[in-house]
Amino acid sequence: MFSLLSGCFEFLLRKEELKVLIIGLDRAGKTTLLERLKTLYTDVPGLEADKVLPTVGLNLAHFEALGAPLLCWDVGGAAGLRGIWSKYYAECHALVFCVDAADGGRLDEAKAALDRALGDRDLYGAPLLVLCNKHDCEGAASPAEVAEALGIGKLADAGRATSVQAITAKTGEGVKPAVQWLVEHIKKSQRPELIRRRMLGT
Ligand SMILES: Nc1nc2c(ncn2[C@@H]2O[C@H](COP(=O)(O)OP(=O)(O)OP(=O)(O)O)[C@@H](O)[C@H]2O)c(=O)[nH]1
Ligand SMILES: [Mg+2]
Image 1 (tube, rainbow, N blue to C red):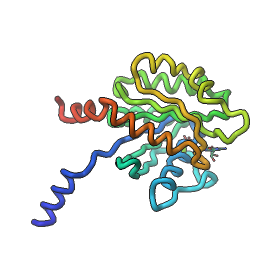
Image 2: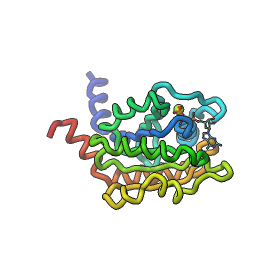
Image 3: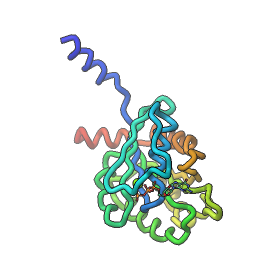
């Protein structure tokens, strides 16, 4: 009986997890980023970049940052797997779109994939963080160049909280500021309330 009651209390007091969906083309570095998040924010280090394999399903990481519990989903980005992304749209509090900034030849393909995702009503109001990964590579596109190629200005004009930041998932450079932006903007957005209402059917 005691354990049942304490379990109920624990459930009631538990802070809501902020759910972040990480998408982007294959080889953008999503899983490397997820593993880096584990290393930076948990006691169990994630895999090093050279041990990461292409994702065929889903990877996830639970961790706490800035006093908030986070759950990150990383979904495979190969062309045949992108249809799975939408299964997670309705539940996520924010969207991370990871770009290989060192591969300028795929920015048009990345724009098409991002446009398709943002056209889905289930992502209404979700803050968008575009991460220009592989900033360690010579000639990597800057956040301003990636923002221009992806047409990010229009999204911000339309009222969606949006940021474009450079990271190096391999070393962790830029990852903590990215997480800080996510936590702050999820808390500021109406997205948690929207998801709660949708779940309650009100
Ligand atoms: N130089 C450099 N390479 C990186 C970085 N992040 C990832 N990579 C490399 O990019 C390749 C792809 O990384 P993944 O993390 O598997 O990419 P992904 O987006 O998860 O790919 P899918 O699972 O196929 O969707 C790997 O060879 C990584 O080592 C980075 O910050 N710098
Ligand atoms: Mg992957």
